[in-house]
Length: 152
Image 1 (cartoon, rainbow, N blue to C red):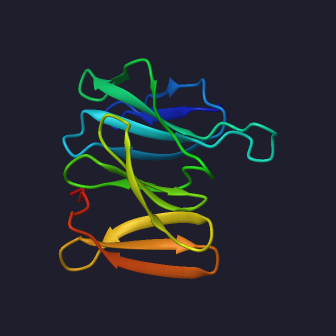
Image 2 (cartoon, rainbow, N blue to C red; image 1 turned 45 degrees about the horizontal axis):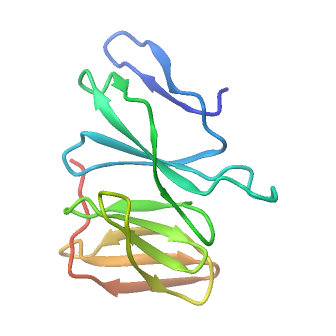
Image 3 (cartoon, rainbow, N blue to C red; image 1 turned 45 degrees about the vertical axis):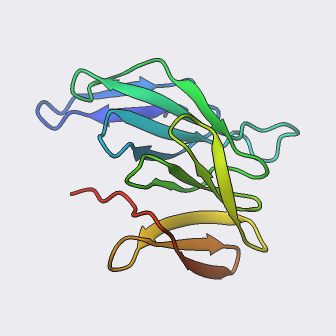
């Protein structure tokens, strides 16, 4: 077992490590056009200075290879436990003070404040424009002016 991500090739059953330099890998999400892979790195959460960021990789060779990952955005406060993308390529991430919205260039656009730490979130509803936010013992729902990405 590695601290990284592996890929299984369904054609030949080959399992190989795609990235193994993570300090606590957590979640994955693809950009709307599936040319980028975002990976949460939550580190060892009880360390004095844990890793708290999302890394971004370019997909190469029809998804068989990843570019060298780069820091996309550091989550503060809290961790990127769960995250999703909208149709414009913005990343919506869990954080210690709510749900953060991050532009495709890694700039934080804003946040939806909630009174406790967010662990996960997802777009849903009839138009995929309602953001559901799981935080501690509560579930919040808010309509947004964007739609979440849907995978076939």
